[in-house]
Amino acid sequence: MRLIVRQDYEEVSAYSAYYVKERINQFKPTAERPFVLGLPTGSSPIGVYHKLVDFHKAGELNFQHVVTFNMDEYVGLPRNHPQSYHSFMWNHLFKHVNIKEENVHILDGNSEDLDNECSKFEADIVKLGGIELFLGGIGPDGHIAFNEPGSSLTSRTRVKTLAYETIMANARFFGGDVSKVPKLALTVGVATVMDAREVCVVITGAHKSLALSKCLEEGVNHMWTVSAIQMHPKGLIICDEDATLELHVKTVRYFKSIEHVHQSIIGPHNLGLQGNLLRNMVDANQAAKRRRRLMLQSLLNDEEEEENHNYFSSDEDAQKKRHKK
Image (cartoon, rainbow, N blue to C red; front, side, top):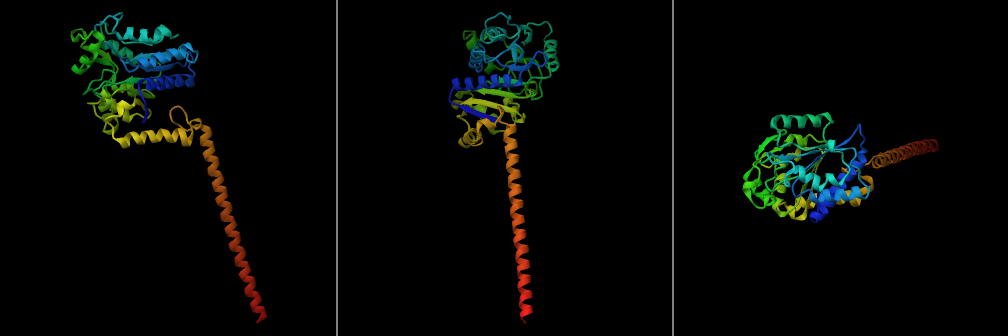
């Protein structure tokens, strides 16, 4: 797992948006091979979405062959309600870019058959070959999507009862009136997120620092569902300094030192976006190894020749002494 620490929310948003942009562009999506992107809602990704819009307007990012799946949606809230996640996504991202409407997948919290809606959502992901990158955020209690504490780490898309803390936290979006906050939601499961080929979680603010410490410094725990990212082969967390307040100093230093090695010693030109060594770096390492082997072999050959020379020289000296006698 990688941890990238940036100074504040603005820098986290900029880095995250750049990362998403580069992943899409390097993938080179087509109509036959679209880039499948999982997306969150809430306050964490707003800055990311606005910067993605800027990239699109600057001609650096094309959503024509991008397919999206959103993490969650409230149950019973009309899709045109200003606080529905359908409205959220269109207002902050979709209506500002050239994504096709049929490529946008948002759960329908008003479906007559909610269980069937969830099953269909999972099936649609499978039909497209799975999610390439799932971008996520968390709540102060470490929940990812609406997988509240105690959720199964093998859970799939389903109907979920919201925790009291989540309802209270979301009341700010409903004028501070808790009674207006929906108590049920449709959400992707922990396993749905972790099935993605890469998972990137954005965490900002001191109020989420305990959740980050539980995620990084303790074991996988269904009471902190974001901790499941520990088991993912390509997990990435991007956080700000405030979110590291509960981490041990040595933990923060360790992850910052890894990034320092990547940037200053190995060099960004030798690294892929996901921290992998590029082919030219691998080739250079292999060439260096071959040179070392040849040099070692040459030294061994020189030593062997010197030993042979000394042996024959000693033998000749001995024969000369015998002749003199």
